Image 1 (cartoon, rainbow, N blue to C red):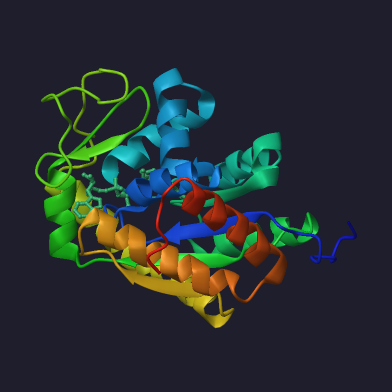
Image 2: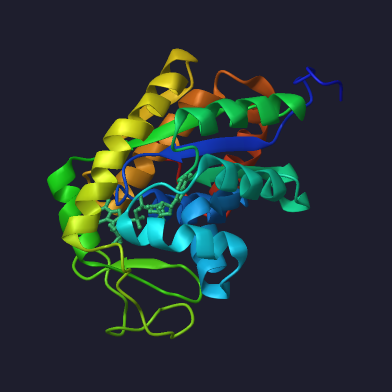
Length: 253
Ligand code: ADP
Ligand code: AMP
């Protein structure tokens, strides 16, 4: 494929954007299952670096604990490596990246250089007070990254991950003070990124205050509307839908 030839490009590439706690990881897990996309969460990648105490992890640790963004250069190095791995060729979802204008501009540059394009940027919208409530009661599995909520999405057995039985943890940065710092950082540094993608006609907005399955339904609708504009990927999407229908699943959109 030539550097600017997108005609044969059928891989699905999305960004899930929204404030911390809006439900990006929760929806990404569902999309990953449905479309077999690579789920690229820079937060999960950084937590793994911190756990292994790599140089990147040591550089990021205090900033993450304080709810601040880690330097663009570090994130872009990590993303550059991740986007060159073989599993992303089938398509991917970015979750928690890009979070600043330089990150967004560099992502576009990187993808253009690989003759890859984004099909959609799906924004999950939720107000700050609901976010504080959600994150205060979020629990996550340190082993597989699965997330729960003590009220809206509890594990089957108290304190243990449904998938692997590991003890669930309350993330260090999910305390009210740090959540409020992260929200301020989001409004200041990430909202301009939303605007950046809106100007490029890629943005679809979903109300994330509804129950998880409703949000999932509207994310799928947003995705369907975005794919209707890009024919090779629309065909891929039709295959996914017809496979799901033949398994008895329904397309509610
Ligand atoms: P993000 O990845 O955007 O930071 P998560 O997916 O981790 O957000 O969700 C944050 C918390 O909110 C988790 O505890 C999750 O179980 C819960 N949650 C996610 N979506 C919803 C929803 N639609 N309604 C209620 N709780 C939700
Ligand atoms: P998350 O798991 O997405 O809530 O991210 C947790 C923390 O990791 C953030 O508060 C930041 O400190 C850091 N982080 C994750 N992604 C990025 C990014 N794209 N740019 C800068 N910092 C990030």
